[in-house]
Image (cartoon, rainbow, N blue to C red):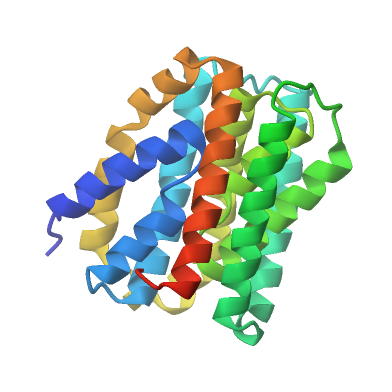
Length: 255
């Protein structure tokens, strides 16, 4: 019998709001909290990946309807989305093959430094208008998905920051990162669905979906009403804060 877990609904509501508004919160933070609540880590990874995929597709549609992103045929945004998705799938599949060979602490340090560097670059260049770079987008799409394949997190903050540094407007960057992450997450969870269906904790999944989907209209409205320069600052701040928290957590564990 599927039970609605209201504390999980609340967590999903809060963290999906920050994720769909500013690009950080749902993957890494939510997974850590659920594991602290004594949920099995594999159940958590599967639940976060699966719900990230479903919620991401709905969130992308909500952002599209709110006018935060245009995805007209043959438009730059649609081209960017295909690049991010394609190279993202490559990155997440690559990560699944080499994840077992990387010590956890090495990856934590790497991801923390990456977030700090990305946040600093976005902060430094937030008043500038970078030229459009397809090669930079390819690299960032693969890198962000590689992070997600290893840990379940580290995707949105890296990809949104990378898009901004590649000449994409902040509002469009948020929406396209969410949609691309949805496809990457569904690819990442597909093998679990085929071979290890018992890892799907449906009470956890349904509770995450309820909270995550319920907050999407509010998140889309936040993005629509927030000025682009302020969004850039908030995205940069999210990167820096998450990176610093991860560094502190390595030496003074609290998660």
